[in-house]
Image 1: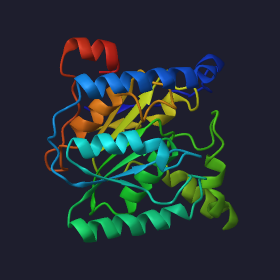
Image 2: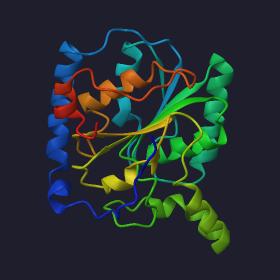
Image 3: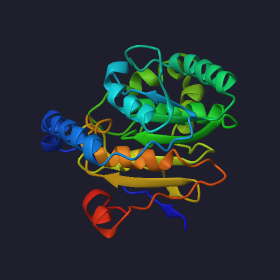
Length: 260
C-alpha cells in the first residue's frame, strides 16, 4: 500500500531542543545496557557498510555504531573526510569512496547516514544505484531543504547550486527530496529537537521505502538501542529480498516503534 505524507512541518519545539544533550546521554547509557544484554548475535554477511556522520560531527561520533556493526558481522567504514561541514564537494569524494569499496569487496554497499549524512547517502544511492545495497537514514531532513528547522547546514549543501545560477539551484533543490532507487529506511523521531520530524520521512512508502518512528533525540540517533535494532535487522536484506521492518512483538511495537 502506498502512503503519502504531505502535512506541513513546523520547527521543533524549544523543549525538545533544550533537552537534546540530556536525552542523548541517557540513550548512551541505555546503549551500553542493550549491547551487554540484548544485542543481536553475530549474523552479518560481511558486506561493507559506510557510515556518514551528521553536520559538524566527525568519525568519533559514529565509533560506537561502527563497532557495533563490526561486532555483528559487517565491514563498517567511516567516511574518511573528517568533520562534516556540509560542503557540496564531499559528494564527489564519497562517490569515489563507494567506488573503491565496491572494487575492493566486489559487493554492494549499504549506507547509514545520520542527519546530514543521510542526505548525502540518498544522493550517493541516486548516482550509484547499481552498487548500493540499501540506505538507512537517521533524522535526515531531506524533504524540507528550505523549511524551518534548528540546523543551518542546508545552506552550505546548496552552495554550489547557488553559484551556478537560479535554474541550477532549483534543479538541485528539487532533486534532494526525490527517493533513491534502492531499498530505503527513513528513521525519524517526533522528539527530535533539531529538525522537523515530518521532513525526515519519505513522502511515499512502497515496497522499497519505509518510514519508522523511534523515541530518540536528534543527537542520540547514533546511540539509541531501538535504532541499532532496526539497523541490525535491515542490513541482513539485499534488494531482492528486502521487506519492511516489523517489531518482534506487540510490546516492542507500542513502546519503541509507535508508527508501526
